[in-house]
Length: 142
Image 1 (spheres, rainbow, N blue to C red):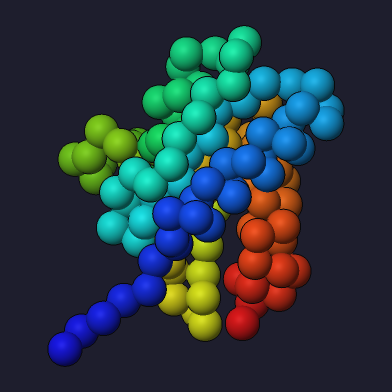
Image 2 (image 1 turned 120 degrees about the vertical axis):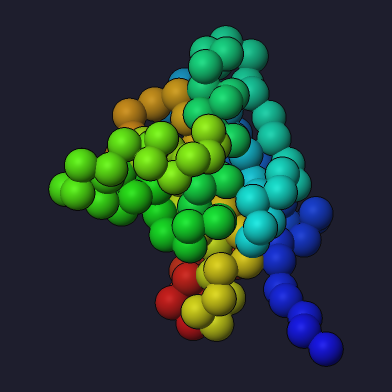
C-alpha cells in the first residue's frame, strides 16, 4: 500500500497564523495559502487591507511549490532562463513569482506555502519563517 505524508490541518493553521504574525510585526498586509503535496488547498487567509490580487497569487504560489516540488522563485528562474512562460505548462495555476516555498519532511515534499503582498524576497522570507516556527529550523533539511 502506498502512503504519503502531508501537512496536517493543524499545521496549516499554525503556518497561516505565523505568517500573519510576521506580517503584523512589520505592519504589512499579506495573503497566505497552504497546500498539500498534490496542490489541494488546506488553509488560506487574506489580511484586511491586502490586495485582492494577492489572494490568487498566494494560492498559485502554494499550488506551484507543492506540485512542481520546488520553490516558485526557482520556477521563475527556469521560466526566464528557458523562455518558458507559465502557459507552457497548460495549467493556469502555475506561477514563477517568488514567495511560494515547499515544505519537506525527510526530503519528501509534504506541501507548499504561498505568501503574497510584499516583495517576492519578503514573501519568501516570511514563508520560510513560518516553516521554522512550526517545524523547527532543520525541518526542510532533514
